[in-house]
Length: 72
Image (tube, rainbow, N blue to C red):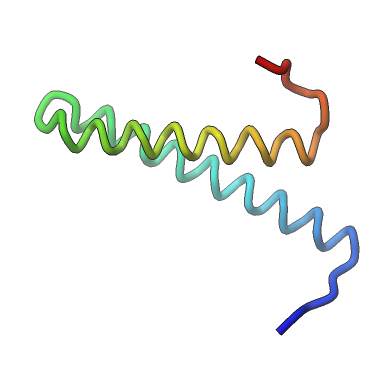
């Protein structure tokens, strides 16, 4: 099923997606930090997920606020 949405709704959806990705990034970062002393393997998995969510946030930031971040 295909929904037709206006630009305001699309913007709201993108903003919610960015907020969700930031929350997930924080959650995985906290988990990584908690696991480092006791389970380095799981901490490594959490670190990979942190990087993935950082990338998602960076892409959504660029879509929502073009040019805000310097290109590396």
